[in-house]
Length: 436
Ligand SMILES: Cc1cc2nc3c(=O)[nH]c(=O)nc-3n(C[C@H](O)[C@H](O)[C@H](O)COP(=O)(O)OP(=O)(O)OC[C@H]3O[C@@H](n4cnc5c(N)ncnc54)[C@H](O)[C@@H]3O)c2cc1C
Image (cartoon, rainbow, N blue to C red; front, side, top):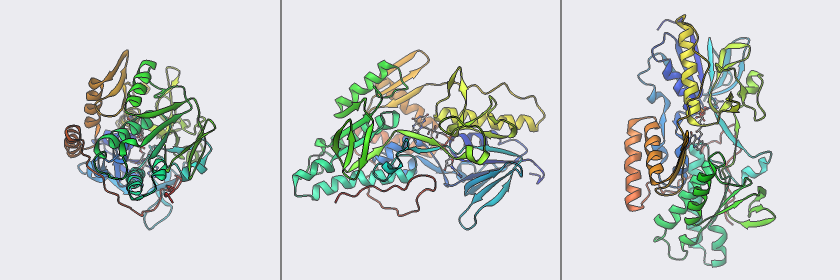
């Protein structure tokens, strides 16, 4: 690789950034991929780490290992903190240096999203969200510890608060998490405790919307709700939370006492729009052109959750497929420009369908006009999720774990492990209130 080859800096090794890097595999460019984590994370299965189905190593892989055969690509562990669009450089903080300037000829920003508490950042202290492996392990620790504390507690009056789990937000993450929690308490844990009955644990799913899974067809929302209620989940719709504090939540004027509240509601894009001083939508996502470039800057692309693009009059959703297809498109467009080939037609998202799983052996699926709920949808969900895991070793390991869980009810990862690592920079610190 010539030192004079154009340099493409990609910030973010999630779904969008990784797809962009792979699309540049056989191109005469020097790719530098910067991520603040050393791993690519398969976020759709984070809830399974939080509910002890899978261990962290089963849903994440080191980015440099995934790209080990891609010799034109260098992976840097560091946090991008700004962009100088005039000097064409990204500033990166690494372990021992701050603000190192990384020059680019092309820049692809794929920095994803973090939690949004809709203006109530004070809730973050008591209701952590689920976005990173550290979040998932912290939530897993807390759920398992709640059962341990209830078992150690002689006063049965305190068991109720300890074993009430509240999820705020009934989108796919909230629904999947509630279903998995219900299965955890009603199958895996049910025979292991003596003073408390885990099956009596209360799981409450709250949303201000009138139905769960609002982005799905009404018939699928209704099927998901029925399934959740069969699993014993209390579904409370039509009211947002008024308050979250150390003693639980207040919703629709009623207090629900709980020591475990999990935020599964909003997301906020990364600060890429601020770095670029580019136009953003109301949520703060960078408004990109139909070829994913930033207006006035043909060398800068923004893809995935941090980009905003309308298709057929509606904004594209923040889902993995959009990010992957956009990353691939940006990489291919750069390749064509370098080869002097004509530009491709504008980006168009090909919707392969949307799914959400609700407990064991049940999912909802919609694609085109097809609406499916039940076991067949769950099989499709399992196949698609296995296919999109980053490496074949993860596919095998997750498949074996799922079969084992399905047959025996036994989970892979139920250890309470405290990692006292640093908090992420742009998200609120994850501090659960410990039961007193
Ligand atoms: C719990 C959960 C469940 C989900 N379930 C589904 C699902 O079932 N189906 C689906 O399609 N989608 C799902 N999604 C959404 C999907 O994961 C996202 O749409 C997708 O990850 C977006 O890809 P991305 O590349 O834009 O961002 P990400 O995949 O989030 O990648 C962003 C990357 O950028 C890095 N980064 C961020 N800021 C910086 C910085 N300043 N410097 C360096 N690196 C940085 C991060 O470490 C990360 O690796 C889920 C999301 C969550 C959180």
